[in-house]
Image (cartoon, rainbow, N blue to C red):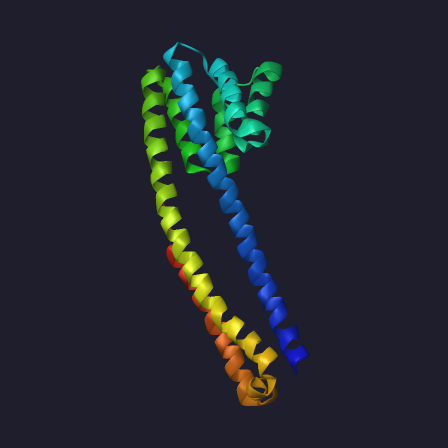
Amino acid sequence: IDSLITVVISPIAYGFASQRYMSYMIAKRRTRLRNEFKELLYSFSASFAIGSSMQSAMKDGCKKLREIFDEDSIMLGELEDMCSKLESTASDPVFLWEDIAARCLVEDIKLFSEVYRGCTSSGGDMIVAIEAAAKTIGEKIEMENSIKLLAKQKIIEGRVIAVIPVIIILFLRICSPSYIKPMYESAGGKIIMLLALSISVTAIFLSERICKIEV
C-alpha cells in the first residue's frame, strides 16, 4: 500500500519540485545579474564624467566588475562579449545593449538601453542621463532587495511550518508504527493523508506566490 501511495505521489512531488527549482535558479540568476549591472552603472557614471566614449566606458566597466566579482560575474561575461564584437565587427553599441536587454529580460537593463538609444538619437546629455539612470535604477534595486529579504524570511517560516507535520508523521512511524498504521491501511486513512498532503502543498504554493513581490 505504501508503495502504491509512493508511486502516485512521487511524480507529482517531482514535477512540483523541478518547477520550483527551475524558477528559483532563474530568479537567482536574474537577481545576480541586476546587482552586477548596478555596479556597472556606477562605473559608467565615472567614465562618462571624464568624457569617455561608450566603448571606453565598457572596457573600464570590465575592469571594475573583475575587481568586484572576479571572473564568475555574469555581467562581466556579457560585457566582454560586447566589447569583443565592438572591436571585431564594429557593431553599434546601441544594438548590442538592446540585444542583451532582450536576452536577459531584466527590466533595468532594458531601461538603460532605452535611455542610451534616446541619448544617441536625440543628442542628449549622456553624462546627465546615465547618472540619473544609475541613481534611479540603483535605488530601485536596493529597495527591491530589502523587500525580497523580508519576503524570504516569511517564505522560510512557511516552509518550516509545512515541514513540521512530516516530521511528526516520521517520528510516529519510527516510534509507534501501530498508532499511525490505520492511516495507511484503511481507505479512509489514505484519503485523509492524500487530502492533507494536497492541502500542505497548496498552502506552500500560495504562501510563496503571495510573498513573491515585484517592485
